[in-house]
Length: 193
Image (cartoon, rainbow, N blue to C red):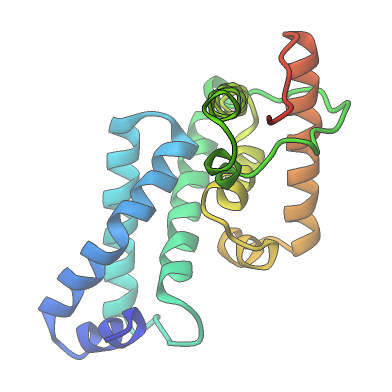
């Protein structure tokens, strides 16, 4: 059964269907939440709150099979994360100045190509990028994670985050500008081998 069919089965009283939905989606959803909030305890809380909202909305009949179930729960998780950030804003979000562009950062699958030396260089570059991403504002970090680590299209990102495609593209652009600025400041080479 698809996730969508399982969701409808759960709505119709099959609790086992929800267990399957949870097991299919928990790893991807938790890794997304953890990457955005960068704190395991907070991620656990947000993950639990997300699934409480998922169950509540399903029981209230607010789930329809108009789209992918995973996109629907990612959207709910995004909203819970943004609510948490609003509460934490003064302490947690760092806005970086917007200057340059980081268009030469490769995709994670690039690590599979080339020699051992190239793989090491590529892994180091991606590790440097990940460290710098931790300094991005949450909306920018979220778009970069969804695009490069979850291989989502900008259309899917915009649907999950509830913003227009242009806003998603703009957030990616600013993230790239910020990453390139940080790389320049710290003299980090971001060229994949």
